[in-house]
Amino acid sequence: MTTITRFAPSPTGRLHVGNIRTALHNWLLAAKAGARGDDARFMLRIDDTDQERSKEEYVEATRADLAWLGIVPDGEERQSERFHLYDAAFDKLREAGRVYPCYETAQELELKRKIQLGRGKPPIYDRGALEMTDAERVGKEAEGVQPHWRFKLDHSAPITWDDGVRGPQKFDASLISDPVIRRANGSWLYMLPSAVDDVEMGITDVLRGEDHVSNTAAQVQMFEAMGATPPRFAHEALLVGTEGKLSKRLGSLGCDSFRERGIEPEAIVAMLARLGTSQPVEPIAERDVLVETFDLSTFGRAPARFDDAELDRVNAAIVHQLSYADVKHRLPEGMGEDGWHAVRPNLAHLGEAADWWKLVTGPVDARDFDAETKAFLTEALAALEWDDNPWHTLTAALKESTGRKGKQLFQPLRQALTGMDHGPDMGELLPLIGESEVKLRLEQAVG
Ligand code: GLU
Image 1: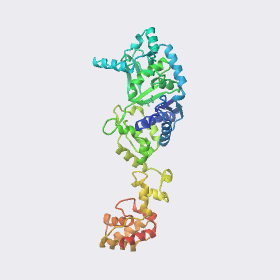
Image 2: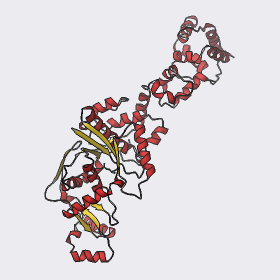
Image 3: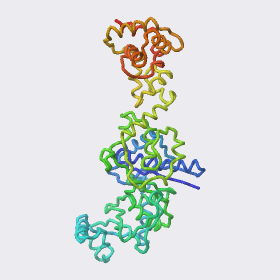
Image 4: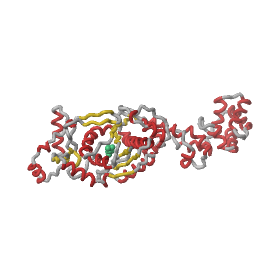
């Protein structure tokens, strides 16, 4: 079996969280097929037919974002290098009578729409151009009007496919406008090039947002008109913000903002892999597990809600799993494996490791202790013994000699030694701070 999926962004902007999700799901679909023994590939297709709006910097940013997320394509194609394929397909479809020239201006089309809507009818293109005589066409061109081109849908039978998420789909082609596939200046709209590439690249599975469902209906007929079997289609529900709407903010939320916020790529991946499915979002850092459990049949029809607070929770839980080897190049200077293990449980994101590390390297904020606490800390100074587990030894001795316990016992020590009311486990911090510095801090505390 062969499974080839693709992610097809238009390089007219940075990837946002919705695109990232589509890319990830296509990657997961291929990876799962690969794990099953299929000849599987995940392709990146750059949809850059719009040469004015497409920018090289966005192509590069897309590659970099995917690399950061660990979503590695097995190949890349660019539509701007494939115009000859679209021309050839266009010519064939035209010969077969499936593509026809239209001369209406945008204003004329808008007027037709308004009239239809005013009559309570759906605004479907009336195929006026098909009624034109050759002489009328020649006349238009003599006036200097260049035609744009539509794909002629076949109205004779319903369009059907079995959608991987939505189940069996059925569309009446007469309720869809013949799509414009090429502009008067010869440039391409998305529809035909995409179908041509899906055939030519051997794409077996098209997984994309449900905003493409009506495109799919038209494209199914394009595949058939080109003599190709349509790929399997699956349309996932869209991603919305916590307020339940497609938000502007989500549209601008991308890898840069995640990185700045200290979100690990594995956290986004873990969250987006499961969001909108019946499987729980869990802080799963192992890709293999996400691949194994990825299952289109668990995808729901309701919009998937993207919640920042949930991402923060997943991120913290992912950070708590990272090994020293994973992160050592990102840790503050001098922080070794023991240091990492001491601070790791306290981190919401990796950047905080530097803050906690300052408790070890000092200086710590001085506190103004009352006389009673100073007396207690003086006793601590005397009781300090630097063995295998100095914190345990010290607190056990003080508990015995002073009768203090719980917060009363631990809090003044923590405050004197770290300047903080809370923080990493003191038993792990003490050896990192070191004997002489611990003594010094206690001495400073008692003044
Ligand atoms: N470039 C199209 C888009 O970003 C691709 C859609 C598709 O997956 O076919 O919407």
